[in-house]
Length: 174
Image (cartoon, rainbow, N blue to C red; front, side, top):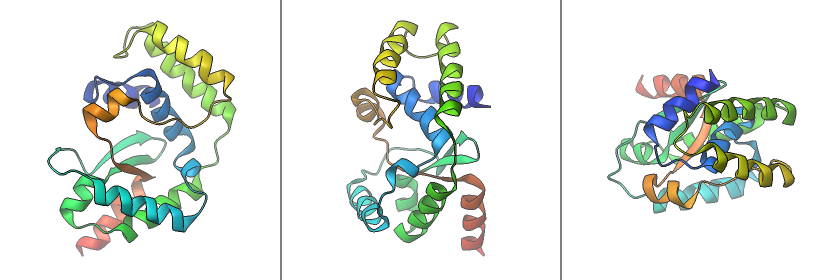
């Protein structure tokens, strides 16, 4: 499953760098919990990001990242009138639901490394190896998207539980 998710993202985002792939694996494993220390601060950050979102980039409302999670893209939310409270509620729920371990994360990183060894990534295997050496030394922290990824795709999303999102969207439509 994770392998399929990675391959889909590599195809959709060919400018991904090793840290972007590691971020995807991190979110797949741990969800968004690393981003929540204070719900009020999370709400403020969401508002600031919604205010800064630039329209015009076409993207789906959400993209699966596996493990029952997805990235809810803010641009389409803004275009469809989906409010911050809706997004924040789903985001906070996802943050409280993930209970993975570093051991599971390291196992998931092996999936990424296998794909790199098989030349299935948009970056060279040596680039991932170099990133992973430094990343492991730092203790596997959460990472941001690379400058190249941000410049190419202007990511703006929140990680949420995919089923809860679908159920909430269905309730909104009724």
